[in-house]
Length: 611
Image 1 (cartoon, rainbow, N blue to C red):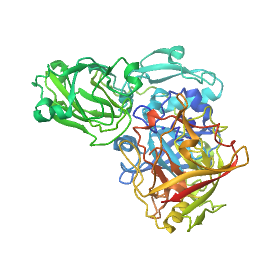
Image 2: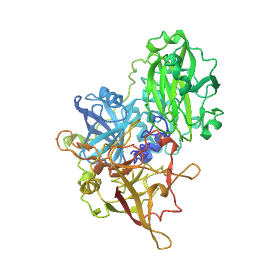
Image 3: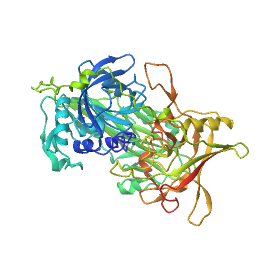
């Protein structure tokens, strides 16, 4: 469910974000939709926890939907090495204790687990379910008592309409911290599309421990009165221009977003600057009320959208430094906390360097600074008189039994890649992928170009081609041609490293001619059907994983995920990745070009050319 990950369990069942995003479920889901798209839903209870290894063992209390094979579910949450942020596994392991209950939703190789006021996604890894990342945005689906959730699931399956607590779909940064405003929404199998206005019942929920916060905007996005200058002109000023008391009245002034070469500047009624193809510096003062700054529970957050990138200081102290990176702007490229110690009551200043270079077609800058303060103190959840759902008798008898469905890596390959040492190519038999899988309600943007078919391929719903060749076979083939793998990338700020290769697709066109076409020419940007820029591909190799944390054996992780070639660094379980980063993902919503690509299911050959 990496689009449990982009869709939800839904993609739960199957399956990246524009907000902080990549990999998190972006679109709000109703509980009815999650229930409908899950093949199995199980109420589980913690029987054993290994905090030092990040392992949780659950016993099955009751099958809520379907019949889950086996009476034990084992999850490898990790110790900060899984997920997109260390807090994700920390939140789960802090909760984990013998006797705690959760609701486990799964479908094929992917799952979502709700522990009440937090959700997380896992993929099957042999006998274990390994955490991929947390799903804080699913708190918009449910946030409350696990027993209440289990009962709601049973009622929904029974055709009834229920009312469930959840967080308001608002500040996504707060959702990551399990903060926000509680509301109650109607849910049923007839309410599959999220519509909070239609389903709203009221605010608040009894017995739910959630901190509601108030957000004060200290510097709004699209703010006026930004001051700017070329970096060359600012050079004699050294770092004085970054200080609060610097006089910038002679600098040019404009409204964010500022820059040139991007339609979004005009769309947002920003300022187009005349200085092109050179690094620019920007500064803007903002006020911090003493009443907020003096609160020990106040937190301050900075969001930046920048192209090429940004180096940001607050009152002369660095808070973001992207070096000389080059990425497209996104709302937001970076979201960071500002230490309260850097701020002063009253006037403060944010200063930004936006690197640029000769020949650059664009430059972009916008920023947002907010302060969050709790408006309520979390009270210990008043334990309601909730009748606990008891275990199935058969489950109690077979508590020690462990299900073993087998792993993706254990399946032997049915085909082999072909290595041509003279031409220095690796040829991989493949088929044009089906873009809408039958278990999913929609088509998701492309994130990879080659993976195993569903259900073994975790990203089979967002790929150009599928293949039965295992990724480790392709890795070995590339090494046989003298290549050494680099380093795979995953998540924010990560960039793939490794020797460059050329990747193309060979197929027979409608006229019977054999064609060999680079993959970027077989895709289009869904917004306006724009062409895709040239992509550089790197042989990164995959990380290795330990499917059974109780054994030392590791496996080639790409064989577990099935992913062979990834466009964005949404996973480091792959063999080849492009040069793009997650900062590019919000601006490239890719789809196959139906005018150039053969029909779905057509046989083709994926060609990797070693330079």
